[in-house]
Structures are given as structure tokens and as C-alpha cells.
Length: 166
Image (cartoon, rainbow, N blue to C red; front, side, top):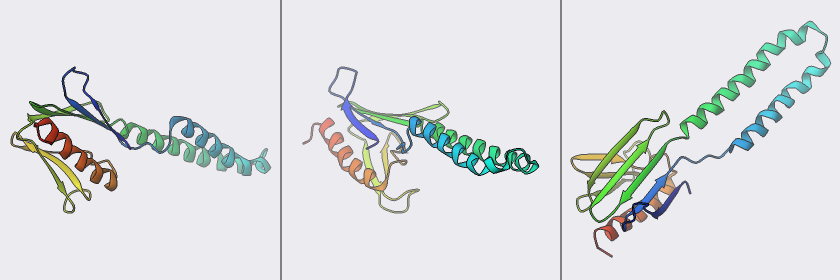
């Protein structure tokens, strides 16, 4: 799953949740995919070597490879999104690092923090939010539907544990 619970590095009894988008194509797979694509595109060009037709087709085929490279790189850039939620007995703090590097922060007293799930009506099915300090923030909207369902139960348990509940 593209999220992980761990003890917080602060040395307290805090719990940390790190979330990131799923990456189905690792960098090594990306290099292999681009190599195979270039080979497959060049195979039909061998009979055209030495003809004018080759020079007519080459810019379009090279453009297709460049556009494919650009689209996959853009996908990797979007995958740099990261959300970190730290829950302790006093405070719940959410830090979201967006793909371009800007950071958004939200915090609330742990006692007043409420986890909500919206099975429908949100931007995605089973939309998870945290509410407190007069704001409502989304959590893990990039996760799959099943991951959000599982995360919500784990999140409620972590909030109850931090408050001293069972």
C-alpha cells in the first residue's frame, strides 16, 4: 500500500502516517519501456534506409517518442506528492508536500479532531477528511477506494488511541 504507519521520530508516543501516490512503473521500467519503444519504432524504418520516405517519417516518429517521454516524466513529477500525518495525545498535524515543492500545513488539538468519510458526494468515492480548528482538510485523495476504506478504520483507531481510548 502506498501508505505506512510508523512511530514518530520526535521521541514521544506519537504515530506517523506517510502517504504517497502509487508508482506502477519504476524508473528502471521506464528506461526499459523507452528502449523497447525506440526499437519497435525503428524496425519498420530499416527497409526505408536511403530513401526520401525515411526523412519524411523520421520527424513524426521522433516526435512521438519525445511526447511519450515528456508525458511519463510529467507523471513522475506528479508522483512527488507526499502527505505526513503525525498524531499524538496533544496534537494532530498534517503536512502536505505538493509536486512543485510547496508545503501546506494543518494542525488541531487531538481531542477535537474528527475523521470523516464521505462514501459519495466528494471528489472521489470514500473521501476522507479531518475536521478541526474551524477547517476541514482532505486526506489521501490519491489513494485507491479500497485503500481509503482501510485507512479510515486505521485512522479512527489511531485517533482513539492518541486520546487515551481503546
